[in-house]
Structures are given as C-alpha cells and as structure tokens.
Length: 216
Ligand SMILES: Nc1ncnc2c1ncn2[C@@H]1O[C@H](COP(=O)(O)OP(=O)(O)OP(=O)(O)O)[C@@H](O)[C@H]1O
Ligand SMILES: [Mg+2]
Image 1 (cartoon, rainbow, N blue to C red):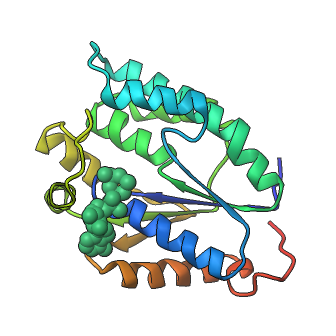
Image 2 (cartoon, rainbow, N blue to C red; image 1 turned 30 degrees about the vertical axis):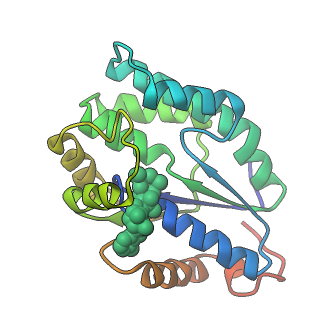
C-alpha cells in the first residue's frame, strides 16, 4: 500500500554509532518541526520488547532458526502496529535496525541461507521497504572497543566471537541496493549527522522544506 510517510533505517555492526546517529537525526527533525516516530529493533511494542529480552538476555538453547523467528515475530508486530500506521499518517519513521540486521546476523554470521532469511523478512514486513537505509561501516574491532569504552552491558549477541562480528561487518560493507547509502562510521558524530542529513535532503524534499506537501 502506498504511504505518505518516509521510512528511514540506520544499520551497521555493533558499536558503529547507530543509536548515536538516530538520536542526532531525531533532534534535527524536532528542530526542523518534521513529524517523526523513532523505534528500535527488536522492540517497539510490548510483545516485541518481551521478545527482545528473551532473545538478547535469556540463557536458552538457542538455535539460529529460533533467533530468526523470534526476530521476525517482533518485526511483524512492530511493522503492523507502529511502522505502517506511522507512515500512513505521513510521519517519518526512524528505525534503529531493520531487515538487513537479520540478513547480517542470522544469515551471514549464523550462516542460515540468505534467500530463506530474505523470505522470512518478507513475511514479517509484508514487503515494506525502507525509503533510505543508512549503513554505518566500521571495523568490528573498533565497534567492540567503543562498546567496551562506553561500558555497555554486553548482551548475548555482543558476546559472540570476533569472527561472528567480522562476518556481520563484511555483510554490511558489501550490501547494495537502491535505497542503501553507506557512511564511513570512523567519522565524528557531527560529521555523520551532516552527511546523513545531506543524503536525506537529496532523497526527499521534506528534509529541505519541511512545510511543503510531500508525495511518495
Ligand atoms: N562517530 C563516532 N565516533 C566515535 N565514537 C562514537 C561515534 N558514534 C558513537 N560513538 C560512541 O560509540 C559508542 C557506541 O555508540 P552507539 O551506542 O551509538 O552505537 P550502536 O551502533 O548503537 O551500538 P549497539 O550495536 O551496541 O547498539 C558510544 O559510546 C558512542 O558515544
Ligand atoms: Mg544501539
């Protein structure tokens, strides 16, 4: 279904600066009076937050398939109850992670077949594609150092091996697509915000002239 909003996703490996950039973009949209909602994956609804807790914290006999389907269930809930309604009401929906995360973590890193992961993603989203995906490229080791310096409590996926995180990083680095734009995450937070904002302004007039009516 056509929507009048704008679906913006920030992706990248652990500690790349996704949440930092998402916060800065949210601040800039607030300043520019651009209506938006902000979500993170997995999460964003009571069910999805409960699944997130299980997935990232609980000590279970996890398999890659279980992870995939937990995440897909959380995403299906978020898409139907938050993302689609937000887009249909004309807002920007800013999401910290979306379907590329599943391809990177459960596909590339856990080695589930990518076509199967893509199919499950499609089932979860009903085919809803982002208008723009900002991929933050950063060597896995630097991201891990950033998390450690920040004192982040390591979740189950954070604690995976260096090889796992390198596979995630490599997947993100090579991913291409019409709506995918790569940013060099070694740049400072301020530089990244300006670079991201320039891309947004090139992609949709609503970021240059927020009061103007917009088509999608
Ligand atoms: N561009 C940057 N340059 C240097 N440090 C940064 C940059 N962006 C974020 N940081 C710092 O790196 C740490 C991780 O940032 P952030 O939490 O935004 O990353 P993330 O990608 O959301 O991580 P996670 O995968 O754990 O959710 C924080 O301490 C943050 O202040
Ligand atoms: Mg984060």
